[in-house]
Amino acid sequence: MCQRGTVLINCVGPYRFYGEQIVKACIEANTHYVDISGEPHFLESMQVKYDELAKSRGVYIVSACGFDSIPSELGIAFVKKEFPGDLNSVETYLTILPGPEGAACHYTTWESAVHGVAGAHELGPVRKQLYKTRLPRADHKVDQKNLHFSEEVGGYSIPFPGADRSVARRTEYYEFLEQKKRPVQVVSYFNVGSLVNAAKVMFVGAVFMLFAKFEATRKLLLNYPGFFSAGVFTHEGPTDKQIAGTRFEMKLVGHGYLEKTHSVDEVHSDLPTQTIVAQVTGPEPGYAATSAFVLESAFTILQEVEQPRPKIPRHGVLTPGYAFQNTNIYQRLAPYGIKFEVLARPANSD
Image 1: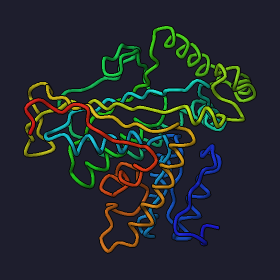
Image 2: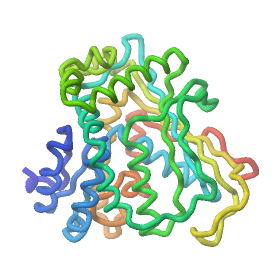
Image 3: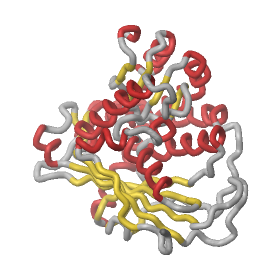
Image 4: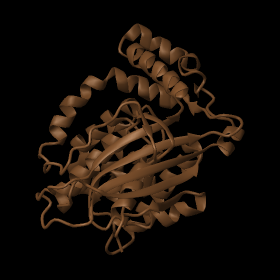
């Protein structure tokens, strides 16, 4: 099957069980590959195991091309282009806006998350192999906040449990390593609105984290997703009306300096006082937006392989931000109602 196409789109998860065989087969067949995985262990393991092989075979392997993590990756790249100086950090705030029918997610996402938490101890050894070079010291370190009120979204936010931050970390690492760009700290949040909603989400999350660690209780999570997710995750997924009525917003708040240093190793001594606020908006994330993201990721690769000078920096295992930031994927996504815009620019910037 891999030999019959130029780009293969893999939508079969959990990827920790079914993904590696497809990646390996694509590389052997010289077929480019995209997927919609949001599983950090799979994503980072593929980077460690297959980057050099894919590079030598002239193959693009680009994972996380669904809702995890195209809005975050392309949004951060968009903020970098629009900010006139040195960025110190970007905070992303995701808001899901359901319609009258509510919102729902498919069981496979739940299943992937359960096994991801159960295998969280496997990430450490992979990251030791992946991150062998120390990045320059951040100008001013930004720590991830727990539950907090965010003025940017007008509600309470918690750390986002998806793959966005881990994918962004790889993008920043390889941009520094291979392109000598200044690394930007990235922190990801999920806007839950009110304190009542925050309490509900945190309770469900605490039960989920505890139960996922033990085999007996893990089976309960897998057998009764609707009960343990308060009806959000089901085997049926969202209805057509739920898909039609739901949309997402992701605000990105960047802090930095108007002045650029002469070197990526040079540190700004003062606080980052300049702020940029951008936003990514689009349709229902799990089906409508994800379909657009992964299809246009594949079409972008198809377009780039035909160019004498592709805008994708190199072959190998890549993140979406590293692969697509200089392509026309932003324009390709516009007809789907996916929009990238600046809401507020830094003071005194031209």
